[in-house]
Image (cartoon, rainbow, N blue to C red; front, side, top):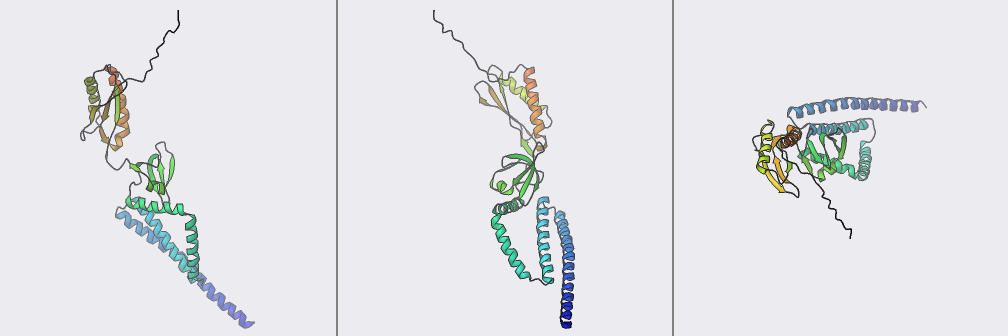
Length: 271
């Protein structure tokens, strides 16, 4: 009985020491992992890497370090780590098969971050929605719509679809169309449009604006008006030019046709 008690005491002492050391490895290891991750983040920011890429790599690196720390702590506690790794591998395979869609979103997120068709702050059109990129996550990309709605788009839809990035270039062309009546003076209407464009300081001289007759419609002669502006001025110029052209057309007695229906009445009464 005395020998058994000594054996249990020795086992408890050894196991207790292993457990304490394992806890120290866990605590100190996670602290070191956080420090290394912060240092890596500072280095990447110092090198002016994309903010989305920095966040993604930092989270991935931290998760990897945490995994090694946990395995080291388990091994020091006396638990066979190889068995746990095998179990985790089998569980990971099962989870991977069950979450194929999530894995495709993860892979798509990596591709978006590497090739960077868009970045945080860009105004884009993708998967049928318009919005400003708020965050490119591991599985989903978060957009903020023009009416301040938060939209979550799976990364796989973005990588397999068309992305229109309106923020890539510093300038944009504003495409507008204005119709006048067939009885109106084309040259006079063109001069009125040019005056509106010249009086707007936000419209760029280069590339030069274009004003030309683009279509002879069923009830109107249509002018295509295409000024160039800085991307930040796009919507303001679109709205103000449209309003000013309408006002100047009215002042110069230039009509803007609208669809009309002629109704013909026939007297079918026989005498």
